[in-house]
Image 1 (spheres, rainbow, N blue to C red):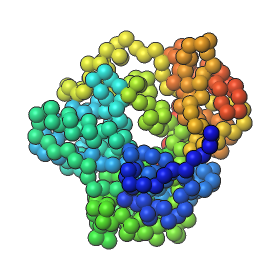
Image 2 (image 1 turned 90 degrees about the vertical axis):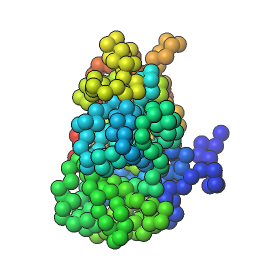
Image 3 (image 1 turned 180 degrees about the horizontal axis):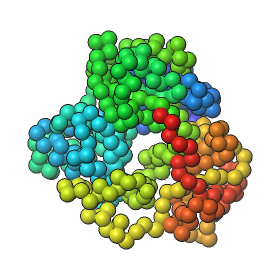
Image 4 (image 1 turned 180 degrees about the vertical axis):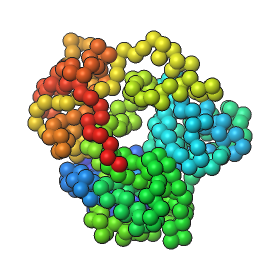
Length: 382
């Protein structure tokens, strides 16, 4: 078997608004995300990691599409979609908003942006969410419009992200708090800026409206502002997201998992009891009452350095060694240069979820020991 087959460029897969702009920097590997090509790395992933930690990086995350919800009943409808209580989400605020099905399974984990009283974006990397929202809107009978907005985000992540943003938008950007958004006109381009990202470093996302028209110009504008700060174009740095406790859909969670299995310690899970009903609410309340029999935990893994997760070092999950029955699996793992150890996330039976519990796993290097550790592994810096 060819361990690294090529990815075919053709018309059946969609292209990010920044596909050609980001491609000019020499993409080494694409993956497919949201039915789109997604640049994963441009070179050594550990060099990209240090560029994030020490300098600043620019990512093409145009594979994150914006499901836009508008109309007189947009608030009611959007609140029906997610377990988050949107009465606690002001205009200009963002939320991590799990979308669940009727049985409590996780369909998507978008960032929700509330741009106006009745205008929302669900920023998602899951193709299914748009269809889910379209069907839900139809059957709800509510007065809403659901569409895929012509919006393309980029992420600016790293130590000097704020300095780049000041050069782009001025000193007022210093006042933008975590999980808040603001609107700007950048050289006649309409953008929404949020203080969010996929790392534990300082970071922002710039959501470009009219992305099909202006993507190349925005890309070059950001790069020019980044030059004095050593900006480097990279793919998403998964080492950092693993260090900081960020789970990845289709790796660490899916339709077959529920919020209590993957986010059991998050205080916003109390919003399950919000007065307004949402899809999956009765199921989630029942799951909470009976408890879960498995859980996602952080693990430290013995042995030789595992790699960067996106470099072909983890083509499949690492099974937990059991007695013929399912005993768990490591779904994301990498070597952390700052911690100088292998770390990752594992779904394990609840009896194996206590900190300090050890169990065997099968890795490309052979059988190693995974030990449950506190999550996240590093504190948030941004």
